[in-house]
Length: 134
Image (cartoon, rainbow, N blue to C red):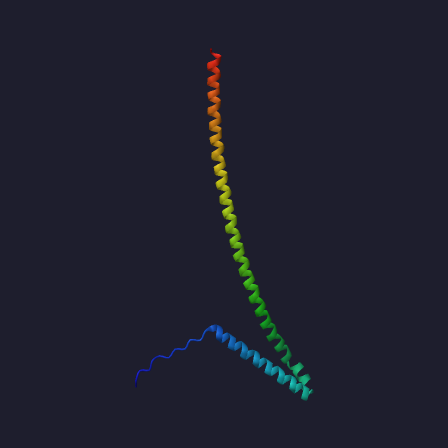
């Protein structure tokens, strides 16, 4: 038997999701229209449909789909919120470090000015004592 090359198929998950969504939506619409048509032609099925739990199941399925969509939106919003908080923390950290650097520079400047003031004071005192001794 000859070796057959391995056949690989690549289906992207995104395309499959769209196909499944379209097929599921189409099937739901077809079933809904068929149910409406049956209820129009035979209204006696309505009590059986209501008492059978079919409507509750349909409402549950629709609610689950809506909740999933809203949860996805909520999660993406929370993710953006977390990213914004991380950026804010980084920026606040940068501001704090810049403020610390400015405080250190200010301390150095004040120490330099104090030393210069001390030198000037000493020089004035030596000049005064030299004049006073004259």
